[in-house]
Length: 516
Ligand code: BG6
Image (cartoon, rainbow, N blue to C red; front, side, top):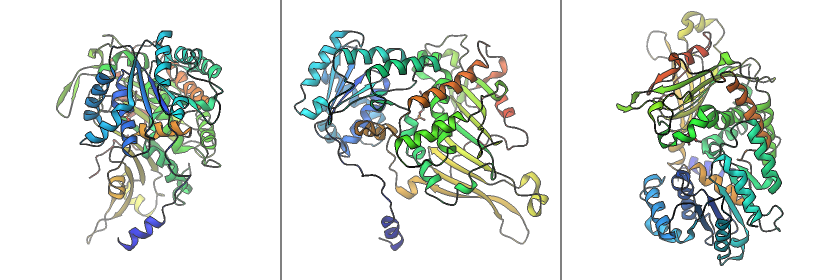
């Protein structure tokens, strides 16, 4: 090993107690026939098993309405794993060891008989801890969450005051409610059956390595934090763009739109982590306190600072894409937004006056999520005086996905006899530095849920304040239908009005670029 590599290895600072294999448990997925189970949850559990992070006695029970046997469910999940696994080829021997942990329980989550069958299946575990330690993953629609938890409690499958050291927890998928009022009602309802510490509201963006790295990057380096404020930052652009359309999720998306599907959770979480104050410790509550404080400092978004859009037909990478209104289960006159751009102001000492431009959309030209910190121009002397706007201002881009990494853009002299300045880029790439190991967000989150670490889950007050921001924004357009200029062709960066959102004095949207 090279001497420098040895030094780097010695200098790895391991925080916390490190991962030891948790106690055995039973994981129950309610709503197991959905896409989430086959695309994300089971592949994540399979990888945790493969990396020996799940105890061998772990059991996974899927509850859903369709008629299936254990074998047919496992076969289906295996097919999905072959398609969606982050590691390929799928290790068939590992799957043979993992598959027997999976069993299927047929039943409607509104039917008490389903819970009776589930109770029998849970009791079948040979290991005592696996019988008592229970993680209920609610992959059901928001309107079914409260009833499912009530039924779990009434059937004594879930207990609020379970005897330590046994534990029981509930994971609730997003969206948590569909506005502030419904989320609060849901919180009250769940609070009747569970302690806040037993409730894990998931936002899978928080499980992404690069999103977690926002904290490391900001608070384990001395060089960036002094620049992280209005003194040095001109504005910030946060982009979460997707090439995909809504696919077969039209029914859900018609109720959600980009504001509820992406802004209320992923966009605001990324914004909070990128801008919050340093927490007093790395404890879950300290980090969540700071996020809440930041979210509370967001000024109500003025309707003029919101741009909605919806994709019309177009093409991406040469492949024709239908309009949103032609997607399955979407109304042909739908006014749901598939694109959203906002200008957000944070009323606190650090960020006063700095605009944050946030945008997200489906059927945009690239899959890319990034945070771009745009620094001020240099004072109008020396190079700035000569070059004017052609002198690029420094920028730091945190690439959350794909090509995860960080780039710093600054100016340098073009070699040669003439004096010329142009931007150059310094790149850190996760793959180059750490190898191509990027665990899926759900792996980390499921493991944390089993271990009871709530740091990467959303607290009740966080949900509340995020909804308040989104409800206020949505009230700006109420029932106003989309107009002609709000439509953008699939494969473009959203409606033209999104460009007008970025003040003329600022640099226009910088679209994510593939890294060379
Ligand atoms: C989900 C949204 O939460 O996040 C989807 O419901 C979206 O609409 C997805 O496509 C994006 O997640 P990722 O991890 O692919 O960026």
